Length: 210
Image 1 (cartoon, helix red, strand yellow):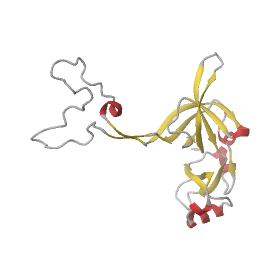
Image 2 (image 1 turned 90 degrees about the horizontal axis):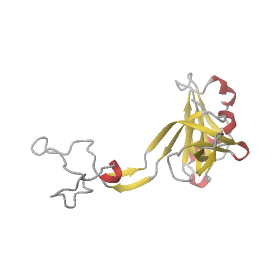
Image 3 (image 1 turned 30 degrees about the vertical axis):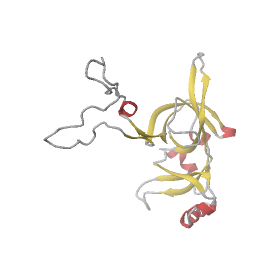
Image 4 (image 1 turned 60 degrees about the vertical axis):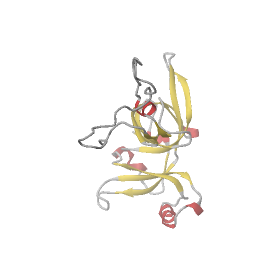
C-alpha cells in the first residue's frame, strides 16, 4: 500500500463544516526520497523504500552512505518500506524521486498511522491494566487498594502463569491506528492534518499508509 513518512508536530483543533470542534494531529510528512525499488523478479515482491529526515554523514555508517548515494541523495534519518504500491502510483516509483503529500493523499481520505507510543517506565497494575482496586473497601482490605491481588496457583503449577496482568514496563510500543481521516493538507509547508490523536511524542516518527 502507498504511504509516506512524517514527523509529529503536535495537536490542534479545527471547526468542521457543521460547526463541530475536531481534535486533530499535525504531521510534517515528506518530502520523502525513493531510496530503493524492489520487484518480483529480484526480490520476490513489489515494494518501495522511502527515506525521510536529514542525518549527519559522520553519524551514518559507510554502508548506509553508499546506499543513499545510489539514490543520489544525502543520508536520511528514517527509512520505511511500503509494499505493493498500486498501479496508479507507478509514475512515482523511480530511484531518487521525491514524493510529497499531495502525490499520495487528498483531503477526505481514510488512512492508517503507525508510531511508537510514549514510554511510561515501570508502572503498577492500576495505571498499566486499569485495575479499580477493592470496590466496597470493606473490613480486612487495608493497603490493598492498588495491589495486583493473588499471584497464581500454589502447589500446582507453583509458578505465575504467562500473561498474568502484573506491574511492569508500560508504553514504548509500536501502535497502529486505522481509519483516520485526512482533514486538511497544506502542501506548501508539507503539513497534513489528521483527525484524532496519533501515538508518540512531539517530533517522533510517524508512518502514514493509504
